[in-house]
Image 1 (cartoon, rainbow, N blue to C red):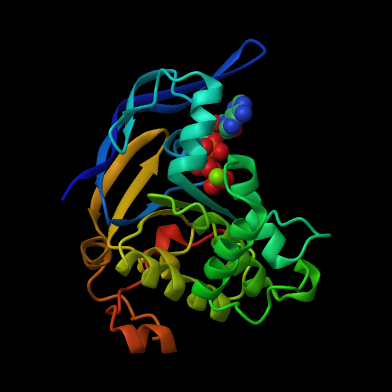
Image 2 (cartoon, rainbow, N blue to C red):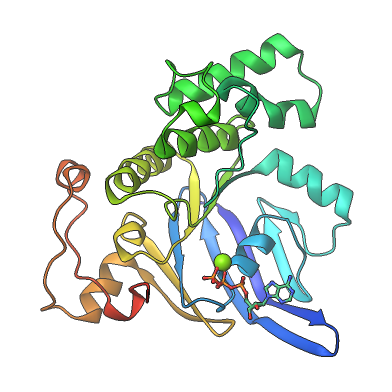
Length: 266
Ligand SMILES: Nc1ncnc2c1ncn2[C@@H]1O[C@H](COP(=O)(O)OP(=O)(O)OP(=O)(O)O)[C@@H](O)[C@H]1O
Ligand SMILES: [Mg+2]
């Protein structure tokens, strides 16, 4: 195995007027190539802040961060953007698709930002990427002509089109219903099995259990770092089992009890 992410004592302090917010207060972990990791924790605990650092959207206040062998924490903004474009695919809760453009054009966009590929090659790669997420038949549709789940698939195809080493997803199922969420997690599982390193943030235990490792963040600190199976078993071995979804039955992921305190408080 080789290391994809190495984080050491990462801190991130936001300064708003006179107030300092210590969003991350010293977080260390490694993620190996090919892992599937879920990050959970209460609202405001620092999950998105951490994802922004992992995703090279932001740099830490202190600490060191290495991505795929590159030291990131001291990089200047333009270099940071280049690393991001080369190494990372992002998926967000809101799909952030351009409404006037077709699925194909949306997916091809990151290749245009990168430059260096002629237009027909960009579109060819975008088409491949859409086929990979099962949307080969919908390439000419605009976002509003697609379901929520299909739009999120387009967003995933767009994240994959640059052939990133790392796929990052912040609440990717947050805007989807249960069934569509399961389909999407099935897709992420397939991508992970084909070798993609996946890190996702979620509030949903049903979503997190697709991952194999759980990082739990509390108050800017890493509270737990355990295999997901162990996390749920340790929580309450006698808790009622979650209903098995069709995807889950097919995949035999194993049924894990719900961790009560992780339920989204409505
Ligand atoms: N740009 C910013 N400027 C100032 N404070 C910020 C900024 N971004 C986040 N924070 C603060 O940092 C802390 C961590 O925020 P973060 O967005 O990382 O939480 P989160 O775990 O992703 O929460 P949620 O589950 O609600 O998305 C919060 O107290 C938040 O108010
Ligand atoms: Mg967040």
